[in-house]
Length: 426
DNA sequence: TCTGGGGTCCTAGGACCC
DNA sequence: TCTGGGGTCCTAGGACCC
Image 1: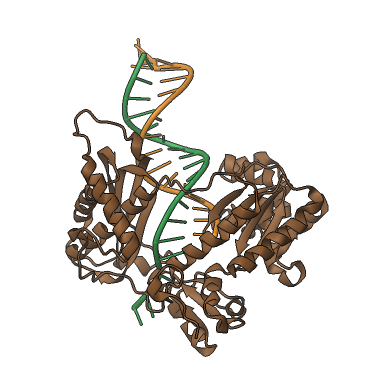
Image 2: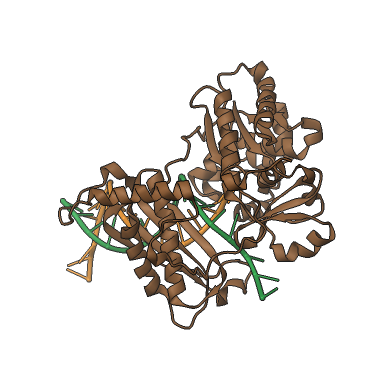
């Protein structure tokens, strides 16, 4: 059996942990730049505040009901996420926890006798909440797709399930499938949902009785086949590795306010590249491909799509590298090429791909070997920035004025990762 | 006036090879 | 006038996830 553990309203729960007076009151957390609402407490959901809706649209409702809003505080969420995952790892044998996202983990429970599964799930939920203060919901079923369905229902019917739902018989599975709308299935997005409804398939049960070959034809080949098999209880999506080693690393941001000067764009790109290179070094990788994109303002809000067409380009380096200065140079050059005088931009980003392990960087006969002392410089910078924080050491091309920096007007203190922001009890 | 920031996997089709 | 068959690799783009 497989389980998915999902933190309830994760970002809101993190904020509430340090502001217990907000318990029982509506609160929301905003995306970067205070743009969208990305997490809502149960009370905020009950007020009808939409998920992923623009903050400015929800503002009247937020004021009227005295909802507390927070800018996102990734230091805090990242640290609490780590605590939750470590707790799970302590409760299970090695290799049975797959961290899936900041607030979710799959568990392999095959070592637990069937009649003890529910008991175990309840224990996990209780211990995680006791040790970290974060409430979680747990769905258990024979496959990952079914466990996600169980989890959703556990959360939806908290009063009955107490946030734990185990689907272990054909009858309970079928009941759950009937109660699950097609768009609430893990792997069915906006487009497939539309397609399926047109074909008269409205819930997970109706999809599950289709032949897997039907899935191949209408739902993107092997992905569709797998999904149908998983719905029928045949496990096809195996437990994976923790996704610590990324195949692509991106740093992208909206600007705090629109930017028209190429100098600002280049500074932003240099800064994003530094951040991406840090992430790259953290996983001991080196990248061969640098991509840059910028998004002009004009086209971006004339349609229902939030982002207008992005203008992008990439270069392949002769040799994979993890050195910030070697990545900044091509990135800034790309930005300069993409920039058009007279236009205003609202967003930019850098992506690193073609990632290989740093120690096994393929040699290139025509390039001198990277000098070791430059690696030393990088690790020194990383260490100083880690200890002192806030980019105390940075490359000059990253700029100092930073007119383009994002807005974060409502951010709470970084209680658990900064001494000077520690929570004080009087 | 104001709409996030990351990621993954898969497929089709083109370029190229013998 | 007639113009193969089979394979690999790469890239762009689509779909999805949280």
